[in-house]
Length: 601
Image 1 (tube, helix red, strand yellow):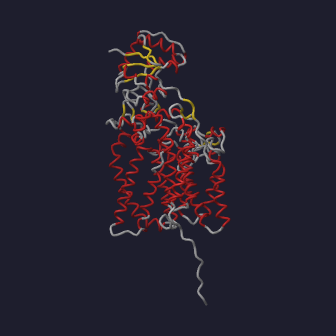
Image 2 (image 1 turned 90 degrees about the horizontal axis):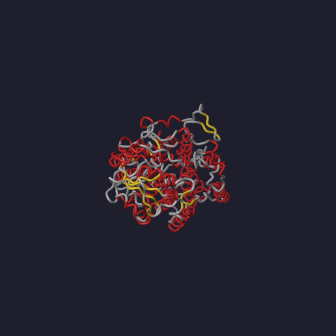
Image 3 (image 1 turned 30 degrees about the vertical axis):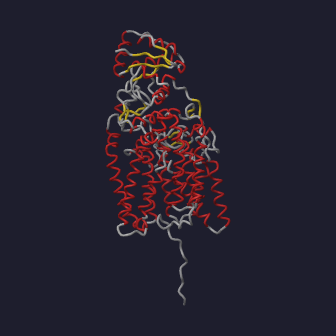
């Protein structure tokens, strides 16, 4: 009796073995697709690129002002001013830059542009380049490292870089859209896992592990100074993905464990050597904060928002905006079809452990993004705690916005989409080859982003753009804007226009000024700040006597102030503010389009 042969079964797919050989060279195709992704990024940021100096992002001008000020520090770094606790804001106590998402690496890279064209132009360029660079980097990861079909890789990269969450973060959050190093970190991990499957000369395995591990450590170190929160999300995502993959494919995991562990050890050593002092400064140095300056329960993802289209997508409407904490946090707005479509693709690709691991990882991150308090259709249930909420109480994780844990889902979904398209486009079955990519495109069409809106920004006084500020404050001295707000945004742009050459009191930053040293936005207002803020709010000048003048003199000494400056055109009650300052310091001088009160020794 002939022996029966069991039917062939598809082998589980693994990072080193599941990838088909790349069918020839696609350099022209890759170039065209990358160019198309760059154009797409330009279209999203087109309005800001067209008017970088006169325009400001309409949905989040506050964070744009802060990041423009951060970019203005770039040229100073080249002069040797590398102090990570700067006294140029919140003078004289200063600001811990590492506790304030300071994008130091980006500021350094953009310093020539900032010095030549200004911080506003640098901000617009970085906003565009972050999206473009992220899209191109993910495309190269999918198409070259994972060897997926170029069309599928393009769809996946577009999902990762132009999905609702990333475009939402593009409203002023440079540190969150700077994801162009993430594919490099993923590639390093993938390369380490594939080490044993590569044909290497004697000693080549060790060199590959050491070299790739060192590159991983360097990438991690750089990402800390590009966007530390993105690094945290990437580490969590990779850790969960690797654990899920090891569970689904233990044989492959055991084979990759040695090189991966060795490379991670090398990377950790490199990163620790580079980051030991900066991390100490961030978590224990002057002006550091040990917690987030917001209540985490208010920043979880609304369950209803997970099936809504973002107001910034072509399929969305402004009404859905109430399901998020703000326009820069539409992180989980996937629409009603995307999640079911990804699950359907995972079922179709169920023999591929990498796809299943991506879906498991995405599900876990989505649960974490619900935060510490259940939110459904805008209603908060304080008595209902979402699963895994306890994770958000762990050190470091307790300083994150919960909803942002869903941001990596765009890359994970992009990988699933790209893999599904790749399988369909490589099959001989015509219906699948045409039908699956068509369904993918139809699913993604409502998520296509709109152009980010831009409005006209308040003008920067000619006093600063012409350099006349030097007549009242020397570089390094303190200039006090009038009125001095605890969160003074337009006035931070004044300093940015002057290349951050002078110090300002107070400002918009994260500092340890809450109860028992807790984190807050801004600092405690001094008596003079409160007095002038009251005049600005009410239009009434209170009686100014000996106590007010004594408080003023103490504040001037505390700030090391050399002059006060007000732009009347920006104030509701300029005459009253002028009168109050005249009572405190005597008549001011009209210079260009501002009034200047000089402090005499």
